[in-house]
Length: 153
Length: 335
Image (tube, rainbow over all chains, first blue to last red; front, side, top):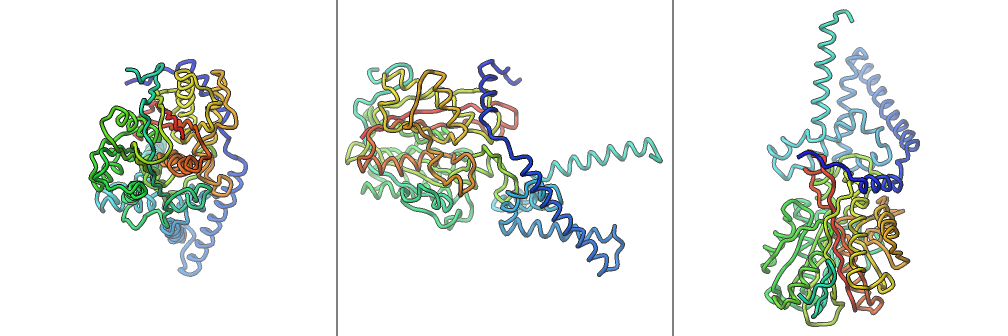
């Protein structure tokens, strides 16, 4: 069924709603996201350096255990019920790094565990993270295609 | 047909009495300003159950039992149970009905359920089809979040105009014995669609429906805003409430200090960080059967118009890009 056309009365009301809706505090949110996101990246870099020094790995290899550690902490904080409280203030600062990805999967797993392991946790684990994976793969495919068509690019 | 007045209002020849009420709320609500006027406050969101859905149901059963206990009745002495909630296929209500074993009619009006159930119960009682009816409704923050939005522990930032779904259950026994406020009239609303699509701002979507029903009640009955001690909308929240007042002003109906919204009473909006206020079936339920009922009993109120509002969308209709249709029903409660 095609969506019904907006009537003039509805359009006028929508304008009024926009007037009453408070705007998100963009500057405040951006500053908090910058500080929290920056802190997470700083931690990630410190971990990378640590693994590089302790395990004798080159920087690009040392990033792997560092990312795994960050994912572990994102998952742990979610399970302890602290992640959503931090996210209230940090916003995009914790959502954009891998910590946010870990949170989206663990929160879904916690939420649907009562619906069983297969149809609950198994099927719904990617209910939030699934689109990131789908469009990540699609983007990688397109970039790979461009690279194949224009070699040396 | 003598009981219908005007276009959408029904006046009861033999107005039923709210004999007793029962209210249960969650721990977060227990820290709000309404706490003293609620019978039982839960220690945690699970209420000793395995899932949040079971927790919501256990609250609803508890609220119903409280109402029956306060009235000194057993469930066998109740003719009908009318209830509704927000969960798919109204499982909280139907599973509760299975426990109570009272003949049951399930209803769905989203957050307008409290007014819808009071209207239907009053009609059935006034029509002589029953002598005692139990009405009830519930909502739970975690079950509603899961169904309509995100997993509980998902770290998303809430919009400044968003509302907080109340964890609670409210029940009332209606009939013709005992002392208590009476339901004297009801205005049944029409579904209103003003083109709202944002499920995070349901107050704005529901405000025009509330304004329509309030205007209709005044027109049908000849009563005016000054006839009431209190005119209360259900769960419009701060933004929706302002929009509703604005819509009524445009209809040349000017409401004063006696106009408010149930969604503004439940939390301390500064300290509890709930943004625009409370929402959910239990918002209007707890305020009506908790606060209003007690104040009627103390003689502090004599005439109240309760206008409970509901957003009638589903997660599917929203994802398919449909507008959010809304409804509001009004009941007049008099001492």
